[in-house]
Image 1 (cartoon, rainbow, N blue to C red):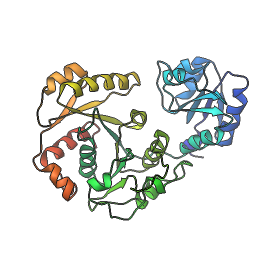
Image 2: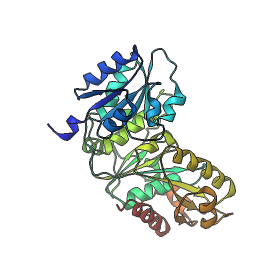
Image 3: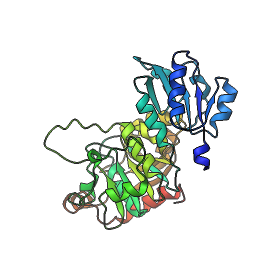
Image 4: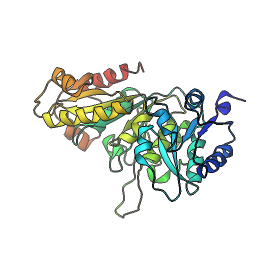
Length: 339
């Protein structure tokens, strides 16, 4: 039996009604189950566990010791104690027994071994920062790569000029059961000629009710991470950044943008996520890199100068070749991961 199959699920649930519900779901995964509410034992067992299930009484164990795959449980009908869930850095919260199928599916996603894929999350601190262009540039520079457009109206296929290329979009995929591997996902998606697979949304003139929530994006990231190609996530939602190996904030060199970056960086650091910054010079810059580093308290690893005619080129042809300033910054970001 492989090491992945032997990884246990830790059930640290004190509530006498919630406890048997949690045990039932944990047992249904087929993994070994470690049952304890003693803080030291929970921490020790969690270091080699596939997942940890906690409730309001035990969540404090992970307030100062962050780890991946902690799931917060509450009793149906709720509500979820979001304050405690956030304090323990839980990936998701579930109400049992109503959401037992969703919890089981989430735990099932971790039955797959992670490959060598490295994941870079790219997030702008304000609108118009050039986040999508930088994310696409990193993917093109690091190809073969998978670019995950985690913004419902992001239009990454339009940005790369492959909007007419056949392939699956977000609306076509059901990744909730976790049994889709990176190679299957790669083959299903549209590609650029330079071997960048793109996961983005379909466009429609009718309201289809589709929602691109953090759980759906997280499923796609986890599937992509079972492979070996670079994964780049273009997102405006900090909820998925905990899955990334590196987070780059795109910061226009302007006072309001830097103020926003300062707040966002502090929020991420509180979640044990330590972002880097990329400074974007738009029409006019009010601050330089040293000032931004000092105010926002994060390292600036690269700067993007204004690129003449880039907006027109992207609008009429797509980003088919990368201007030299963007290539340099993409390499600067990837150097932080040594990819």
